Length: 357
Ligand code: AVI
Image 1 (cartoon, rainbow, N blue to C red):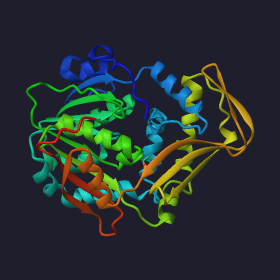
Image 2: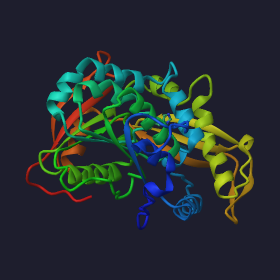
Image 3: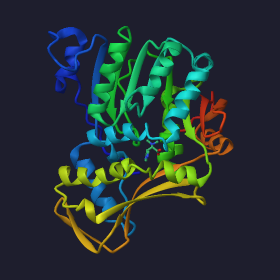
Image 4: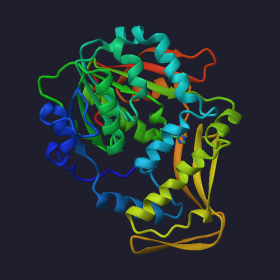
């Protein structure tokens, strides 16, 4: 994936809602919550997004990064996906977290600073918070609106919890609002979002997480397992067309943010399991020969030509352990559901070998 350049930090000043939630407001704001929330913005700039989109569309095999799915509407559509009958990962992972939460807390430790990557609607962490009892919860997500809404909802439910929400793109080296005295860190990376990275990028990301946690630090990570292709194909091409809308929303976003003129009716959603690569692929297929303008540049499409928008790798337990070990972790424990659809691993950072991302 493209590495963004220098990180930009718009701290609290840019976000009066977050300041209000530190107790300085009068209570009139809709986002106000009783918990202690601080918000930090390390988002890619619009110029970074533009450069990445133009680079991806300019390739001989066109591609767009799946992180572009998550504007406000895309994040809502993703939440709708997680409730679809065909999309088993979310409910299965939550079941595993519910069944084994206290064992997981014994592994991860309590009263620590808990970083969640790709926190989304913070649904899964709610299953674990009572068991984990972190001193600080630090959700990281690329969608600002979603992150703030979820942080506020969480603060209402857990008023004593200190929350530091960081809006950041963790697919590139990222910065977090950590204090030097916070030495006891743990991380939670649910949802099999690691599967949305190609294996080399996944190794790099896990290596960066290992570096962040330091020797002995623990990561709890959800990983989707390989299974019957019919189950996978249905999960990514649901009968109600929610995943299709999620995929096509990427074009709506480009039209809005980058002066694009994509005709959504001229593209179709396609998703299928690629057995050789052990991944579900999502594409947007051009239904016609056409030219599309984005940010002042023109891109030609043949009939049937695709934009590759997402990979979702499925790792067997041994394959995932190899990946984790290559990134500087040792596998401590793995939990699965009775049907072996999904896995949750506890990994520990090796004491000695440094694995810089
Ligand atoms: C966020 N990620 C783990 C989801 C997945 O299953 O790969 C994204 C998704 N794409 C289509 N449906 C869900």
